[in-house]
Image 1 (cartoon, rainbow, N blue to C red):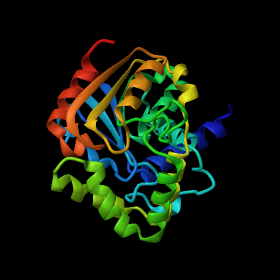
Image 2 (tube, rainbow, N blue to C red; image 1 turned 90 degrees about the horizontal axis):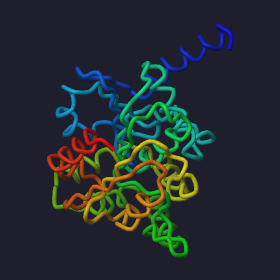
Image 3 (cartoon, helix red, strand yellow; image 1 turned 45 degrees about the vertical axis):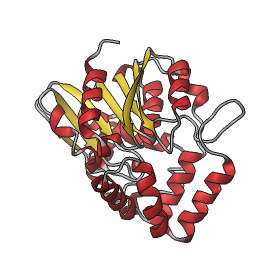
Image 4 (cartoon, rainbow, N blue to C red; image 1 turned 90 degrees about the vertical axis):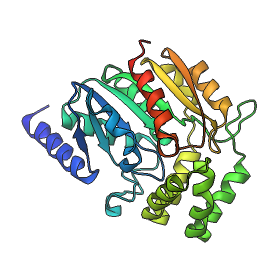
Length: 279
């Protein structure tokens, strides 16, 4: 690779840091990446972040689909699969000079982390997968939680009246009776441009990563709540059985798909244990 192409890569990396609102904060030596899920942005980690600033250099960024990112940067031709999001994550980490990290991915970001760890196995010390699912659709003996007809109804509702869909979906996703968390999740959902939100939902719900789980070599911790409308407990069990790296399962007694918003104290406790326990 000539100097010109290396220079171009560095310039691309610096530009992406700005586009995705990347921050690196904290006083620790070990790198910890917090990657948010669909419908949120990096602010979803606000109640969790302070507890890890002493011991880690924490990397926060927004997925390109987040409402906090200029929608002009969302390329509908490029982000048709999760691979483009993996490209972004790896470009960010390279631009920051991160060569080893702990990765915490919520929802779709858990799958992004899995794909990134397959592509760059030496980069990831451990994957912590929160509300993760390799496939949301039921398929034979596999129970992902949704039938195709149900998903199509969701897409139709999003397209017909996005505001009404958000007002119905946010409390279901949060699950627990935590009005502040519902308001926060609603805020970041409303910040997304509706056509981008629908497009990303289709990408996520049509993904099937079951066939690559065995390629993961990094140790993994799957964090699953007691009642998640998006991810049934059987999916967490499936991940534990099929991920290639040594995998443990942490069950949170709290409800909902977003425990870092709805039950931050319990989540911090489990996340700290997941990060510090030797696999």
